[in-house]
Length: 507
Image (tube, rainbow, N blue to C red):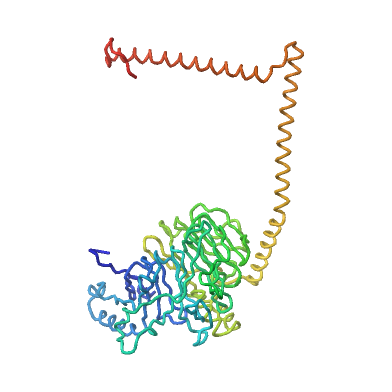
């Protein structure tokens, strides 16, 4: 805020035709930390702000105005055309009420296609068909996951003008409160829903700022006023979870990225199937490839892009390239493949599995771009080569075999855990006994040597008295050395004229 008045923030919308000037900008009341296009209607955009509010933009009727502004700017000279005043600004349509919003910055926002959520926490299929997407989920550091209905116009009373829509009280229809492992509010960073089966799969995952992976229930249990939605919580990473994403090819496989490593989990299991080694720099974001089941993309704090092909090698990235000197903060696919899990879910629900597979096959042969945003506000668009967008023959099957093999390894290690603990305990006891036997044998040798020389073996009290006498002698030597030091110091100060001969050195 400046002079007590809130300062506007903006989201820049770019077009490949003009990499210098944005196509248009979305105006927000505060800085936006998370935003997503509606997968069923790209004219609708939702964003989460720094102060915890959620903002909604509708560009349906803005394209004609934008086209007129650009046509007018084309008639001006080149200098005027480059002026920022010619860039269209789209104001937000709705914003949530502060008292019903999050109490800290909104760090993740996701659309929930094909479902409706009531105020009682009940979930049902969307009334207007599989292509409807009217609900969003948001999470923040206040421990809450809020669910919002974007059909705010339903709240408008008869006779209210459309321009008064900003005065509506937009509040969440449902809220889930999560607690961390230490009993405090969960600092939510990322969310992961089963968007392809939300109407039947009511569990979702949240990654926290403390590295916890929490599995929670979305639907409120019957007959409970203050239910505990959390199913279980796992300590996945030692730092914040910066990426949490379900595999687009395996519904029960989840990727988590945090600190200096990434992990692959199977839903319902409390041990990761795969854990990478620690990297040289902290990871800042990551995601699955939308067209290759075995490929994972990661970016780190040093500006590096890592590409892991789990079928090629699993101990190090297959490709690592430095693209920036500043940390990457976000990455997203565009072009080939589904732009998001929500779009993939909408396509699958509307066209069926066969048509969706055909669309994925076609997308694998189309151009594929990866957008990377860094901490300096620079956006980079990387076009991926053919070998990174086209799957190898039977890649999904081979990746499934890899995951099954890792699952068997984890189960085998877990099954032998008790035996290993027992063996370690027995080995520790054996070491202690061997040390005691060696000490007893050494004492026996000393006693025998003393007896052969005609001297009785020293008793414990005599040994203690000898130790005490040695300590007293050592203390006396230290006191004498300290007294000699003070004499030399006094003589040195007299020579330098720092003190008089009759003065006493107080040091």
